[in-house]
Image 1 (cartoon, rainbow, N blue to C red):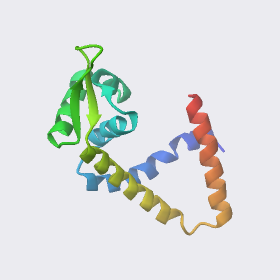
Image 2: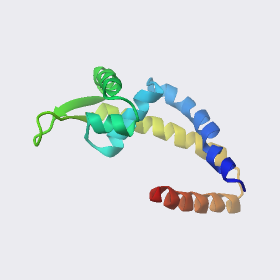
Image 3: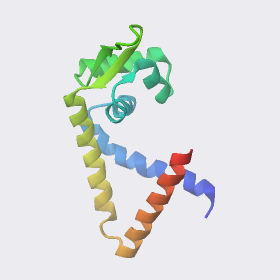
Image 4: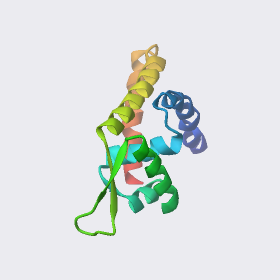
Length: 136
């Protein structure tokens, strides 16, 4: 196995799974930012920009769009009045979970015909890769 192949492997498949994201009505950057907010809990706007590797003004625009859609809300920080935190609304959480469920269902459908031994190998590989990624 070449490491180059391992590095490229997920990208085309993930792009195909992103077809399911169209149902959310969100662009890729909006869906990604919402995901960070949902799974990371309330997060400072600057930290969200850093996590998404964009400049703060870009993140401000993304958050404003998500806010207009009712998917996130801004709140102040009790410890530092200069900090604005972003929190997912119940609607935002629901929309993200529904999109995730559609992607998982599509992946499960693609895997269902594999022999049990192959599925066990994939499960083991995912566990190993998860351990490796945690160390990065």
